[in-house]
Image (tube, protein in one colour):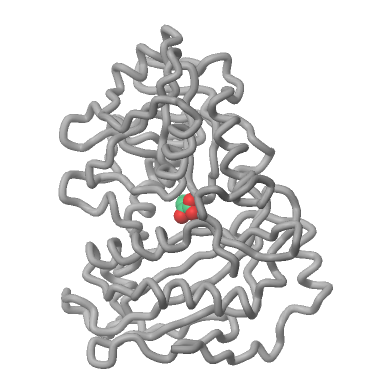
Length: 358
Ligand code: COI
């Protein structure tokens, strides 16, 4: 079903847009429109439209405000030198959105509607896609439960929206190594919990540990599994990879407690095809601590759509503080970052068929 367009009556002027595009931040500025589909249990998905970006009138009893019925996705639209706008493996996001919806008892948006919403949105607001190096139009699809009811039940009303933010890098200051605190007091997710779902609640719960890590002088938090408190899972909003001295690359196996990152799986593919041995397996905090201290761990990096590939230069935990390698971005980290971004920005051939023209 086609999207109708209800144009914004007072869009940003060309000058205002140019001002935003000349000083890109991450997730601060938004475009003139948003895509939207409404859902009710009785009628299903209805009223596909692109309308003016703006506040959402919500009943104060809307269930998202009380019981956090919310899921989201993150993907980027890239402006290629030939003027086309492309996005990276959007079907993977669409499918994960369905898995997240299932876990949160929210309605599952058909993959075609997810993709069509992105297309319809970019067709209207594609001019907001920046051209500066490492910039993109960051797309944020999300779904909220809008039932007006304080009983706890599966929502009967929901709204799906796609907003977009012309953005520079998530971490400002170029590819600068971040420091990570290995968290032994708080957990991100537990067995049977919502760790694999991209729901806002997971991210809300990560903020207190994040603030405590900042206070200790660290940029990011790395969580351990809740059951044994020994096995690495992921950072607050990124997956993690460890490069061993012998060239093997290891990353936490998907246990159901961590997010199945699109960037994560793409990196596994790229490294494997670059003849590196990539192993998804449990990695313990002891192995990491000893490896970082002895040099058996050569590199650590974090990855995600927003973070792309971010080197880790220092790690800490209770009674532990150590530089990773020589503290600068590692060779494997920087090579896979380059390979990935070359595909995304159209600087290398897309041999995997990952890029979708919008
Ligand atoms: C992304 O990487 O796109 C995410 O959704 C993570 C978020 C913390 C920015």
